[in-house]
Structures are given as structure tokens and as C-alpha cells.
Amino acid sequence: MRPQHSLEKRNLLPQDLQPINSMQDYKAQGGLEGLKKARTMTPEELIAVVKDANLRGRGGAGFPTAIKWDTVSKMPDPKKYVVCNMAEGEPGTYKDRYLVSKNPYLVFEGMLIAAHVIGAKQAILGTKKKFKDIVLRLQKALDEFEDEGIVERGFLKIVLGPDEYLFGEEKALLEVIDGRAPMPRFFPPFMVGVGVGPTETNPTVVNNAESMSHLPSIVSNGADWFRSMGTEDTPGTVILSISGDVKNPGMYEVEPGLTVNQMLNDLAGGPIGDLPFKAVFSGVANRVLTPDQFDLKVDFGTLRAAGVGLGSGGFIVYDQSRSMVDVLWMFDRFLAVSSCGQCVPCNMGTRVITDHIEKLRDGRGCEDDIEAILAECGRCTNQTRCFLPTQASILSRSVIEKFRAEFEYCAKNQNYEKSDLILPKLQHFDDDSGEFVYESDPIEFRVEIV
Ligand SMILES: Cc1cc2nc3c(=O)[nH]c(=O)nc-3n(C[C@H](O)[C@H](O)[C@H](O)COP(=O)(O)O)c2cc1C
Ligand code: SF4
Image (cartoon, rainbow, N blue to C red; front, top):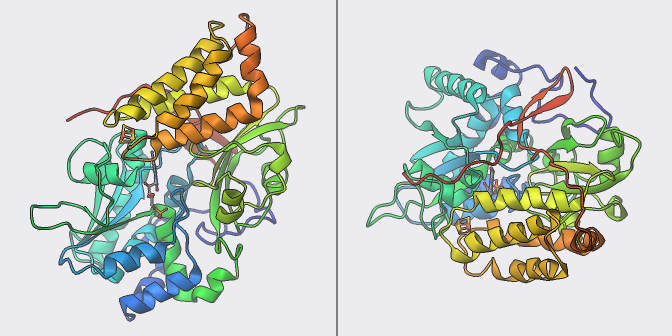
């Protein structure tokens, strides 16, 4: 196993990366202290601690956790729910599964703290059926919580969902929990939650698995302790997944505030071959990062201010050998295939964007295709239910802005040599070999209507 790098700070992950396999081990390492303390505190006190700690959601948008909780806890409805989002479908991201593979107890402890805050009727974790080993670890940990009487039987629940990317979108996640297909509903979870009926809206808090896992130590050690790590904008630690053309791909828990340069060259060991880096993508929801931006700090605010984004901390790295036409086609095709079709501008627009890039790659395109992509980026987001088409729009615009010459080359040359890249849907990370295993068939699906 790789030794800890000086830029790493293991707070969620075990110091030695050895998996915690029993409740007994968990307790021996300080587990459950946060929950015990939380149960002696009022919801208002807990919200204040999480607000002071400035915990920002690790699911992608960096939304302040305390604001979500505050909204739902003040709602008068008798039934409320906590949902933990462990769908983890973002290309280039593996952090939630890595965390649970090391410690499946932390996430449940965090969910129980969140449930205490909002007075939830139930706390439900949604994850994918195909994450078999992870599901087994979670189920064993849940059983131990029940067997030891830490939680009433049936209060914690695991719901297994489909492979689709959209399953991770919070409104689609609630649909799956309610037994339907992963097609985002209209209203957000705090307005229409789990299991609504004609007279009940059941406000629901949805938080990412890593966000939940930060809660026990914030409650145990206090807001000042959490804020002593990372930056003012993004305190604490964040688990990065770094894949692609780097020497040392892998999973790294760090304090936000290191630069992109440090992340790529120090942590991930620099480029894998002789060629320098060309482009970095933090998942498929943000603008592309280029070497002129590598002095930026890795935190939500700095990257957002630069028009980029931290996303869920999954960085996909490409060197100079990669064509950005091929990369954008691969990402846009993934988004087009993932669109559930409920909103016409998204369903049509993401396909139109992909088709124009395909024409350029096939040597059938011209300059008009580039303009058509940019025009479609402005249309595909009209009155849509979720952020997916906005992702396609942000991503496509930024890649074309920065690498327009590559698209123009395709428009003028019919003999463009395209290469097929593998969509980095990460299936597993092997600590010993230091390598990711990619999903073998990452994008050939459509939302199944049940
Ligand atoms: C298309 C799409 C896919 C998403 N996939 C995930 C996911 O797999 N896991 C996740 O935690 N959030 C995902 N999100 C974000 C969730 O909708 C939601 O914002 C998040 O779970 C909130 O948790 P947080 O506040 O703790 O970050 C996705 C969003 C979109 C638009
Ligand atoms: S925006 Fe796209 S993916 Fe989202 S609900 Fe509408 S059609 Fe489905």
C-alpha cells in the first residue's frame, strides 16, 4: 500500500487505510462518540455547529448543509425523511465507495445525526444494486447498528437502485426510493419528499455520503476544529479521485487549499508519459481546467470564481496526446444517453450537440456545426427539470472556447483521425497496484420506464 503523502490528511479515511470491519473496531477508534453527543444536543445547537463549521455538501454543488437542515427542521410537517445519496455515478468519481470500503459505519452515524436534527421518521441510503461488495458492507454495518440497539429496527434502510447516471440526481433518487424509474420529479426534496400522499409532502433532506460522513467528527470535535483544516471557503477535508494521464492515479483525502498544480504534480506524480498536461475535467458538470489555471486553489469558492468547479472531487486528467473533440464527444454522448427524455429541450438538445460533434469527427462536418453546437447550448436548458442539460451546455461551450482550433481542424479536414477513449466510470480502486478498474460498458443504457 502506498505511503501517505505530505499533502494528504486522513480524517474520514482510516490513517493506515486498513478497513474497519466491525462495530467493535469502529468504537475502539472513537466511533459513535459524535452520535452520543448529538443525542444530548438540541436540533438548533446541532444546526449551529454545522453552520459554524461551514460544512459544504460534497455531492457536487458545495451547498451549505446547515441551510438545508434549517429549512426542513422548521417545517411543521409531522413526517420528514433523511436520504443519503450514494448513487455515485459521476464519471471520474469513486470517493463514496472508497470511503465505505474503508469504513461503512461513519455514513450511518452521520445519517443518524441528521435524522436527529430534523426529527426524521426514517433515514434511507440510496445506492446502486451493482455496487455488490459495497452493499454487503453497508448491510452488515446496518445490522450491527440494529443488533447493538443503537437504532430501532427498520429506522435505517438501504434502497438499491439502477445503473443510470440520473439515479444520483436528488429528485430522481426520491423517485427510485418511492419505487419508480430514475426520472427527476418537478419539485425539490424539501417541498416533495419521500412517500408523499394527497395530504402530506414529507420534507426530505438529501445529503451526499461524504457530507454525512463528516458529521460525527464535527459534532465530536467542534466547528473550530473542522475550520482549522482546509480553507475559509471550504473547511475540513475532501476526498479526491484522480484518474487519467497521471503517474499515480488514486484516491487522496486532502485539505482543500492545495493548488491544482500540487494536486496533479505532487500528489498524482505528474504526467504519465513525456507529454505535458492539456486539460482537466472535474466530472462532466463543469468547465474544463487548462494549464494556465493550475495555480488555482482546489476549493469550491476559488474554482467557482474562476468559472470552473470542484464538483464531487473527481478529476479526469488528459495530456497533450488527447484530442478535445474526442473527449467532448465522449462526455456529451454520455449526457445525451443519460437524458431521461421528460424535457424536450434536454432530450433533443443533448443529442443534437452530440450529433454535430460526431459529424465533425467523421469528417462530415463544417464550421456551421461548431456554431450549431454553441446555439444548441443556449437552447437545451430551457425549462428543464434538472441540471443535466446545463452540464452539457457549460462543458461544451468551455471546451469549444478553449480548443476551437481543434474543432475547426475537423471542420476543414475530412481525414481527421479519431480515437475512441474510455469513459472513466470508475468501478474500483486497487490500493496495492494503485490502479483504477473502469466499468466495461459505461454508457449503453437508457432509462427504463417501469
Ligand atoms: C445528473 C446529476 C447526477 C447527480 N449524481 C449525484 C451522485 O451520484 N451523488 C451525489 O451525491 N449527488 C449527485 N448529484 C447531486 C444531487 O442532486 C444533490 O445535489 C446532492 O446529493 C446533495 O448532497 P450534498 O448537499 O451533500 O452535496 C447529481 C446531480 C445531477 C444533476
Ligand atoms: S432535464 Fe433532461 S435529464 Fe433532467 S429531467 Fe429533463 S429530460 Fe430528464
